[in-house]
Amino acid sequence: MDDDDDQTYLLLLLSDSNLPTGSFVASSGFESYIKHGFGGASDDIRTTSFMSDSISAYARSALPFVSDVHRVVTTGEDATIDVDDDVEGPSNSERYLQKIQDLDDLYDVMTLNHVTRRASKSQGVALLTLYSKGFSESPYSSTSTLPSLVTNYKTLVRAKRAPGHLPICWGILTGVLGLSLERSLYLHIFLHARSLLSASVRLNEIGPYNAQQLLLHVSRGIIKTEVERCMNLRTGLNLRTGINPSMCMNPHSEHQGYPHSEGPANTWPLGEILAARHDLQHSRIFNS
Image 1: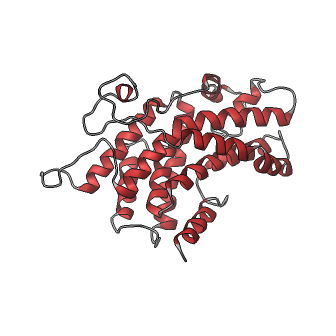
Image 2: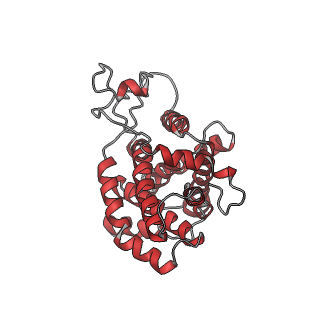
Image 3: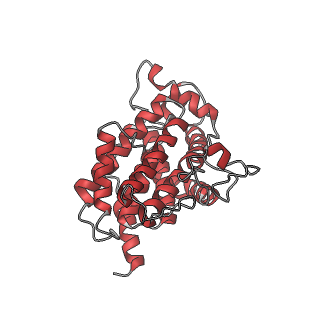
């Protein structure tokens, strides 16, 4: 198969709803959104309104992290890092692990509520487990060291030395498998949208056929718009100098780590508040 065939096949594998990634237990705050009476009277309006806001907010907060981790895994690229390999110090594998861990820690502190953090960590480690048990013998790995990178990072997560958030682990998984960055970003947001619609079906907001209609006709435009909007965003984390990320993202700072004046951000405070109140519901189906 040529490279495009490989990429297409990977998309089919990773979009399989039977993959044990734990997404079916998360509603991304949708259950709390409904219980608190938001979104209008119509079930369709509630679902599409939440889906649009959730995709927009999640893409802006998560895709810069997916991008940076994917680049670290696939090429070792980091625009702010200039490591002299002749200088004694950690191995390349250890440096890459540290870069990923720094990004993971940054995402953890930018995730504002415990419910979202809990769900993200649960799904993240599930992706690493999926690779080790289902994809570890993949012929798509570009080097023989990549599988050990996944194993070593999973060890850090299990030892509670790294959070193991979903966007970070998704960047690792798709990078090791050889999926292109553009397709990785698009598929990640597509799966987020599909998960929201699946939650809506389980909450009896919409039927399964209506969910497919929304996924085909409504979600597609939202996903495309948000991925294109966030595709070139980076986290702003300067791993070489340790400069504060907020300084890197300041267009007027002399320490700009990247040529981008914007980075990850939370754009939907209401969604954060409702997600944080999930555990306060008297009865609930999902864990987030």
